[in-house]
Length: 295
Image (cartoon, rainbow, N blue to C red; front, side, top):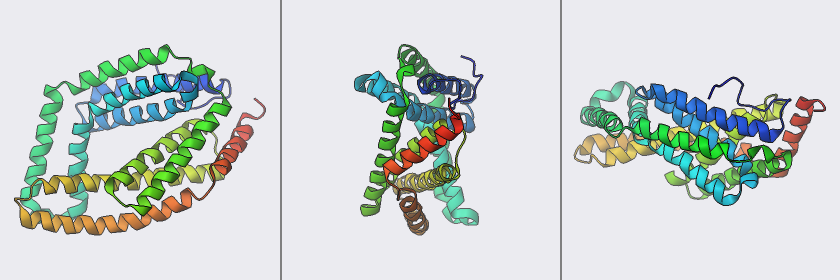
């Protein structure tokens, strides 16, 4: 599959045809990025394309049917899962370096354990042929998409899905605020990223309000991602309690960093999700009408 157009709406297409094209393009992007899967950046790019694909595909749920939608989303998730261990090993090391800064020598044993963990993950990635597995699953996804009538999706259906994405993100944020567990913040991040990818696809030309919302969604997603990376680092440290002094010291650093994240994340989330879903959808419709100019 050749990628010739931007994976966004165009004025010359119906929304359903644009959606079908974008899904195919993101599969193509992911397959192309797999050629660089031996590099950390390649793995990251593949997973990002799969996440975009899943978010955009959800906009067509009403057109493809609930069961078929779940089946295809599961297939997409399996492709990303094949690359997860390699990604996690890398981000844990990055979170450690960012957190400890010039104090790394205080954590010599944990640093050595992290480096060994990274090497094991890399060996496992190669031995299990994870890239080949992801490629196989993505090609299966492409065949599934080719059989679907995504082009039947209209504006009304898309608005319903955006409305639900927004409500899921708002509800997930409220749960994280009431019960600030790592799993709840991680679930919130997934909903934030879903809405960001969907709006990025749907809004080629953005009004100031939509542009601001997209910027806030991107910032919130990044902060929630950093929060999750700290949790993965904390889990790793707990598995190496033999280095008691180091794990305790690292735990204090993580707790301090997490407290700072928590306040910023909740403040940004509260502002972002202050609107009603109806107001957000009305804002999108205004942007679409202005962009299409009568199309």
